[in-house]
Image (cartoon, rainbow, N blue to C red; front, side, top):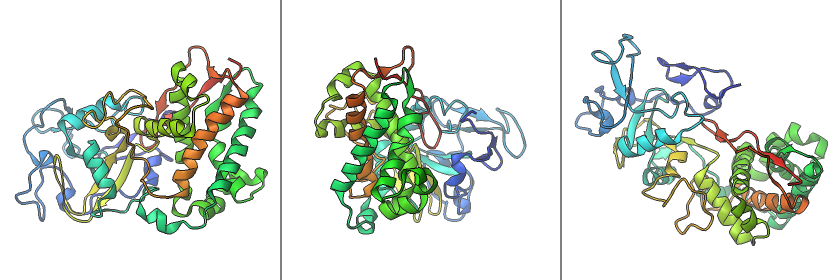
Length: 380
């Protein structure tokens, strides 16, 4: 089953049933001013920005047929920036992200039906700007008010037990898939153990009552933590030097490697917000009432913010990630504990653990992104 959805260009949304995009808030522009680049609407007079220009935008662009007339490229056609939903984006979004950062820092995307921000400075600011509403990021200030009486020592203990149980179950196999056999179970199993849920009931209830009891608004982060853990293990196991450095590393170094993985390969690629007022950004001004797509994956690889942004480097001196905010939240805390305990348990049960011969992790996904498989040799 492919991750590439069919698209209804007139409606601007992926049309495949069950696609994760359908679970996000509505992307439909709220005002005529956000309806289409270049169109006049209430409150647009005098507004400037790259998406308002009637002239073709600079740099590499793609020509598409006009959705109303059907006219092809050329007279009667439209020229737009590349889209994060373009064919092939699930396999390799980084070229598209690079073009957007360099040539289209603010652009309206007719497929997303939203204005798109791709630079680190703009995305980082937008994630906490009070004018961009209807979004929640675990670790942002509201989390501190929502969670009380969380026993950190208990969470660490149940995470450690769950990780070692899962690692021992696959240690004797000649080959295993860490996504299916480990990453899929550790976040759910940790929550289940934390609330005293029987193991047999874990997957049936953990995404509802148990997760909510532990993490409040962030209960739905279990799936995100699964993907983040898969990317983290993929990044570590892809480099023998990282395996050697992190095998018996102190907690602080593992935490740095975890944050670096969230920067390079964030589990959430696109966050959605709505502008309650006009918001100036580096490429122009976001109209009031417009939907805004924040490209977390693009921001994390912005060379204006990070040196050698495509390289996984836990020791980099310019760290930063946008998946989680800086405040207290059980979902954020658990994610970091799970990453640390996963490494401890896997290397304890399988000291010679390595990727299978010829296998390299391949991330996939449009809205959320991670390797779908991690084929390993437990015995080396």
